[in-house]
Length: 298
Image (cartoon, rainbow, N blue to C red):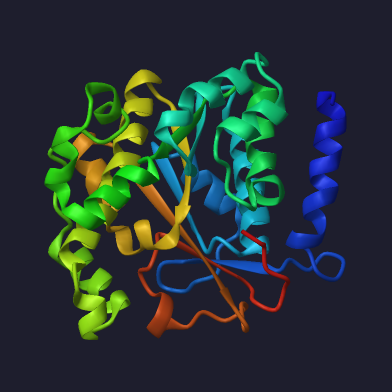
């Protein structure tokens, strides 16, 4: 597929997800306090950052279309001045070599899909960003910890990782990785609930969540180190970064001077109005999308 055809196809694919009636967008952007913000203002703020975190609901089709719109705008406006790097929770670190081979045109997309363990909604929601990065010859980072090692920690605690090979450890944040902050722990345990079943092994599960957060942060920091003056656009589930916790806290340990912007994307039935009780300070920017639109299938 040539580049011009790809660009047209992507625009047609996402037009329906971003727009409702002609000229009416299915999302609205706010600052952290609920003041409406223009799209160009958001992109200008991205240009002042080292890393932009687009926190999503994984089944939010409008949110995914918005992520592409942001990434495309950042690439079009800033790539001439600085290296743009796409970073994804959706690929695990041990498939980075496969991702690199695909981006370089060394393997087919079919072999890439067979070998990289893509999420079920990859083709509809994440492929357009990867293809744009491929077209523009931009790096794409497989940022997540391999799920099998996250599961090891949830079952046996963080010390379970000590027996891994040197190669396996190289796919994770350097060991020992940091504990979750008290604020993040409180938020996590509130989400898990207070039943005795939910509380069983909860500390190990929290440690596995921290491995997830720390590994993404480490590879983002590594990308910034390797690409001086670069800008990382990272996609992850919103819980990892909302209220500037989790991955943001770990990034501050690995690269203290990195400036991060959190864009928290959430669907709401009334997406035009900002609920201060729910969304104040959940991100530097909060994007509310139309919850009445069809969901992505993961």
